[in-house]
Amino acid sequence: MSVTLTKETNSLAKNDIGLVSAEENLHTNSPETPKPIDTNLIHQANTQVQSPPISPQPPNKTWENFRKLFTDKGPPGFKIFRNYFTMSLNTVGIIFNFLAVITGNSNIVSKKISEKIDKGSEWFSRYIIPLSFGWNGIEALVGNRAVEAVARIIPAISFLFLPFYNLNIATGVSSGLQYLFELVKDRHGGKNPATHSIKENAKQTIQTSLAILKDIFTLNQTHEDFKKQISTAFMLIGSFGGLAFASKDRDSLLARFFGNMRNIGGIIADWKLIFNDVKNNIRRAFDLRLVGSLCSTASIMNIIMRWVNPELARTLNHISIAIDDFGLTYWAQCSKRDNDEQFADKNLQPAMS
Image 1 (spheres, rainbow, N blue to C red):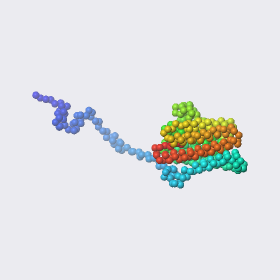
Image 2: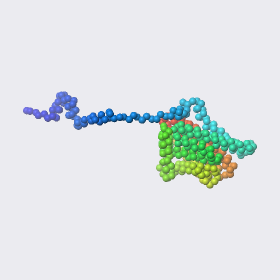
Image 3: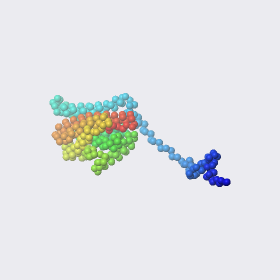
Image 4: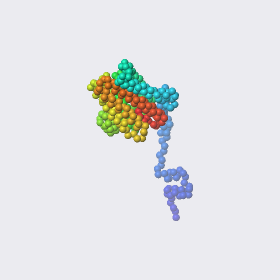
C-alpha cells in the first residue's frame, strides 16, 4: 500500500519528528510572506543631510541677574528695600493727605501753614507716589507679566500731567486694565497665562483681552456675566474718555460723565471683589475683599467730589487719594508675594495681580 505525501503533509511529518528547519517553519507557518526591505530607502535615509536642532536663545544675563535679586537668593539689603520701599512711600503719602484734611478744616495751625501742607500733599501725591506705581510695574515685569506692567506704569506717567482732582482718572485706567486681566486669568483657569515666557505671556494676555472686549461690545455673555462686562466697559471707557476729553476739568459735563462712569464701573467691580466666592484660597479671598473695600470707598468719594464746592472737593480728594495710597501699598505687597510664590514653585502661578 503506497502513501502519497503532499507538500503540506510532508511538512507536518517533518515537524512531528523535529526535522523541519527554522527557515522552512517560518515560510510554512507564516500567513503572509514578508516583503523584502527596500535597500534604496535605507540608503536615502542614511545619506540625507540632517538639519541641526534649533537651540533656544539664551536669556539676557543682565536681565536674569536683575530678576534673581527678587528671589530668596537676593542680597539681604535688597530684600529690606523691596519689602519697605512702597510701604514707606505710601505711608508718608497717607499721613500727608490726612494732615492736609485736618489742618485745612480746623484752626490747629495758621492758614499759611495749612496751605503749605495742602500744597506739599499734592506735590507728594503727584511726584513721589508714582514711584510706587512704577515699582509695581517692575514687580509685574520681573514676573514675566509685561502687559500688566504697562497697566501699572500708566498712572505713574499720567500723574505728571493731570490736575490734582483728576488723578483718580489715571488710577482708573490702571484699575480698569487690572480688572480686565482678572477676566483673562478666569479664562485661563484662574492663573496668569504662560508666565514662563514674557513674550508668550504678553501674546496670550493681549489675545484673550481682545476676545473679552469683543464679547463685551457684542453682548456675548458666554464667558463673563453682565456685571463683569459692564464694570470693565465703564472703567475703561470712563478712564480713557476722561483722559481724552476732560483731563483738565472737575465739574464740566464731560468730566462728570466720564468721571462718574469710571467710578460706577469701579464700584460694580469692587462689589464683585468684596463678595467674591473664592473658597480654596483664604488669602486670595481676603486680598480681594480688602482691595475692593478700599477702592469702592475711594470711588464713592470721587463721585461726590465732582458735585460739591471746590473746597469740599479738595478735602474729599485728599481722603480718596489717602485710601488709594493704602490700597496701593497693599497692592505692592501682593505683587511681591505673587513673585515670591512664582519663583518658589515654577508650577504655581501668581494668586493675584
